[in-house]
Every structure is written in structure tokens, then in C-alpha cells.
Length: 289
Image (cartoon, rainbow, N blue to C red; front, top):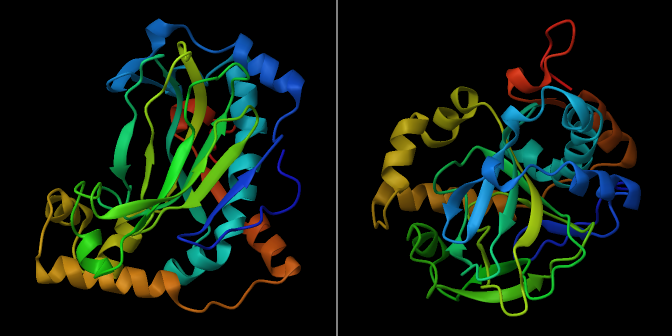
């Protein structure tokens, strides 16, 4: 597990990398209990995902999901507590909106530059846990940053970011490494194509965490989530969207008082992570962990 709170690198957006997160025995168990290929569906060409809802009801995966996942996610999320508190003041209820396994073909063509903010601005963190040791030829995740210019305009150019960003750093795929970043308006990233001698593999555990849409979307944007989603699906010069982007960038970059160790510890203790209820209902029916 993550010892203490991960050290955040602020540029180009808040993120961290921590190695040797899980013990070798647990990694062995993860690989041994990894679902077969039939449990996965294609997400993009060459990359396959398995929604954990169907595997978390019993056995190893239930135990892992109840005992390990909340500690891992909340401890990781606490690294971004200042950003989260500034955007969602007083919020301690978070939801694991996407809990999935991923694996890739040896000829995986990669994933072009994107962020998650355009389709869901209520996401607060993405966490990627790399599982395989034998991963030669496969890429990790590449952090991108906007080219000099109007950042709000660039942010509004949904999925046209390939020529509007540049590579900042590539986080290499390495067993037991965890890469986490604070989801936000400029959290651009991509995955480079796999190269020989890569084979089928590149197993990853993926976690996306969000807040309640009804509680925060209209407060932040003045519209409900469905309207926001519709307005962000395509590149735009719409004045309202540009104003949203400006405000989100300004808030991200604003000075925030750093939490003391005691304050961060209190934040961790208050925070609740809710899973899909069919996965984690305890004997008393409570879905939170």
C-alpha cells in the first residue's frame, strides 16, 4: 500500500507516481485471479476492458475490493485534497464511477490525446495500477501539456488536442507502479502505440473517482450535466464554454493553503468512497467502504 501521502508534482497538472505499491504476493494473486479474455470487451482498437461489477460479489475480488481498494483510492486522493476542497468545499462523499481492468494486444495502436473533463467535469481523480512484470514494448501513460497560447480556447477544442499539446513526460509501464492525477480541465494525456516485442498483456487496474453530479454540476456551470455534456462533445468557440474553461483553469492554478498533516489525516478519516452497490454491499446493506 501507499506509505503516507504521495508527493504531488504540480506541473503541468497535479499528478504523482509511486512504485512498489503492492506486495509481490498480492500481485501474484491479482494475476492468478485475473478474468479470462472472454470477460473483456473492446474499448478502443487493441485495448480491452472488464467492468468489475460482475466479479466483486465473491471470492478474491470481493475481498480485494472491500479491504484494499478504499484504502488505496482514498489515500491516493488525499494527495489532491487541497484541489478537491477548493472545487468541492466540504465534500467528503465520492463515488468510484469506473472500476475496471484493462489489457492490450501486442499491436495496440495507443490512445490519442484526451482528457476526461470534456465528458465528465465531476471526475476528481484517475488512478492507474500497473500489474505485469513482462511488459517490454508496452507504453505507460504520457502526460501532455498545452502549447503556448490561449489555454481556455485549447481546452474547448474537444478531442482536437493532438496538434495543440506537446509531450511533457512519459510515465513508463512498470509492475506495481501507480500513476494518479487530479482530473481537471487541462489534464491532457495519451498512450503511445505498443512496439515489438510486445505481446498480449499490459494489464492495468483503473479507477475513476467522481462527486455527485446533481450536487455540483449546476453550481459550477449553471447547467445540468446533460446540458454540459452536449455542449462539450465537439470543438467549440462558444462563449459560455470558453468562460467555463477560463474559470476552471483559474481555480486550478489559484493559491491554496496547504493542509497540515493533522488536517489531511482528518480529511482522510471523513472521506467516504461509495462503490456500485451490487459490488460492495456488506451484510448490513451499506455500500460504502
